[in-house]
Image (tube, rainbow, N blue to C red; front, side, top):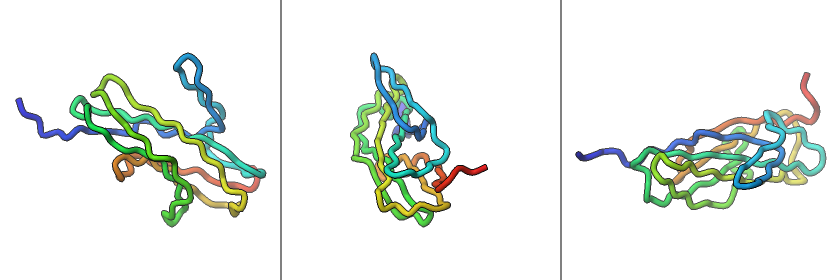
Length: 135
């Protein structure tokens, strides 16, 4: 039997959090974020999970996380990670830490967070930046 599938890979999770910790091989995210309230130096982590079909195995792929502004300009990006999927058995997770620059202009704006695999955006989410709590 011949398959025309080149190995489908999906980003099944893209989550922003205040921080994370790993204990006994289990990752715990703290303070899931849907907005960022800058107060001095603001740090956050982005958790991503990639899963692939059985045809996605045995191929090295490159993944990274991008933070862009509303016009699509890259403001921050993670290191590039090598992703090796093992069919449908084991997903691959990546956690990247980010700090908003000290000179980041605070105001009512949106940041786009993108999970990129082999230069293709597989998933994206948006986070609002506020200089105060919204009501």
